[in-house]
Structure formats: structure tokens, C-alpha cells
Image 1 (cartoon, helix red, strand yellow):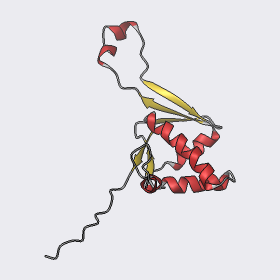
Image 2 (spheres, helix red, strand yellow; image 1 turned 135 degrees about the horizontal axis):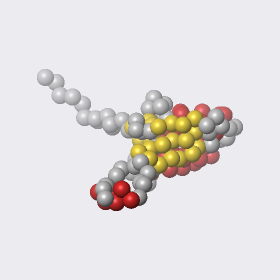
Image 3 (cartoon, helix red, strand yellow; image 1 turned 120 degrees about the vertical axis):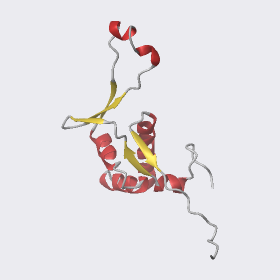
Image 4 (cartoon, rainbow, N blue to C red; image 1 turned 90 degrees about the horizontal axis):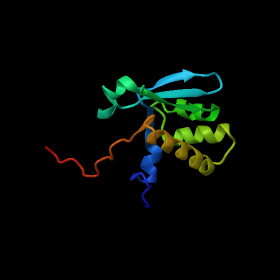
Length: 131
């Protein structure tokens, strides 16, 4: 079976459970959602340069209603496949079309450190030895 770009085979990717970064701060705007994630300070961002330049302490990502729906589904309990099925049902799309949309969005959230994919360990295929 072909490997996905993430290094996971498609079955393991669909079984992964996306979970939000614990360091996120959420700002509800009614029609959308803004996610604020802390920025890691570099060594050169300290004094004396920090006295002269006000460095940001967090970066924000604004989500529209659709992005909000997918992000809130990333609760660490639902699998990627369940999120795609719910998205497809609510937007009256086929599973494969919804898969492309949702996986692209989840990839961008992962690259921005807003979510993490929790992948279960593969089960051992070796049978246990009798004692």
C-alpha cells in the first residue's frame, strides 16, 4: 500500500485522533474563531533588543465558520475518518471530496502547531509466548 506524505499509511492516518494544542487561547468572534498560540522566544529576542522592539508573544489564526466546525471536532476523541464523515454529511459532499478538504485543513493546522495528530501504536503481530 502506498505511503502518505506524512509517513503514515492512509488507514493509520484516518484512525488518528486530532487534538488541539493545550497552549492555545481561543477567542470566539460569533461567526468565527481566532486561535492564539504562543511564540517561542529566540535567544536574540531578549534584552537589550526587547527593550527597543516590542516582540509579539503569540500569533493568531482566524477561522471562518467552516474552519471553526472542523477545529472544534478536533477533541482528541474523534478520529480523522469520523470528522470527515460528519463534514461530508453536513455539507452534502461525497466522502472522497470531503477527505481532500478536511485533510488539507488539518495539515495546515498541524504545520502551524495548532493541533497534533495522536496515532495509536501498531499492534504487535507476534503472539505472546506461553509462560
